[in-house]
Length: 275
Image (cartoon, rainbow, N blue to C red; front, side, top):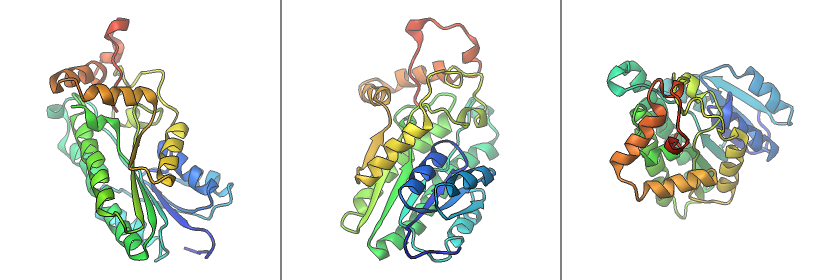
């Protein structure tokens, strides 16, 4: 990695598209050089980011594995990381008993194990330097039992909680932690999770990933503990605090059950999903 002493370095995972790519764009515009990573091709993302004047380096790897995370860390070549956007993650549709356990484990290892391993490695370096910003992408899915997406929602409940706990542990160190909690966003998430036949997968008013990224980036720069992206999602989280768990799970079933997107819906039955 050819470095400069002028521009700070930001590391962004899940940066090939969606929220991760939009976070990388914001970091480039803010004056960061970029190390981006994903398990998908990154050439197009690199090209667009370089047009903004950033030095861009990329690592294509599977961040469900320690080897993948280690490859990303090695690519910094010891250069201090000023901002970490721990955004890599994916979902998995269908009922838990019908899922291949290899796929289940990959969701857990990407969303939880790989994420917290990366955060620990970079966070230690930041704490030693006495400065740094970490943005972790959680989800409002963490507030609701996710019928037909049980593993994903459970993984995001962990991440939402982990981010807030880590933030408290790092008080007074110069390192900030912010948790971005989006709802349904217009990304490749639903195709990759095999959920295009569901009501939530076919939902037409998904959030713009650029707007979601902006909300998270600005919250990180303001050193906020966490931010729920969008007023509708804020309302859903507020409702989740007063509704029973069984009712929340049933609500999620209506929008995530396979085939639910192919069934005519009555307006009064529509529910805002937690993803």
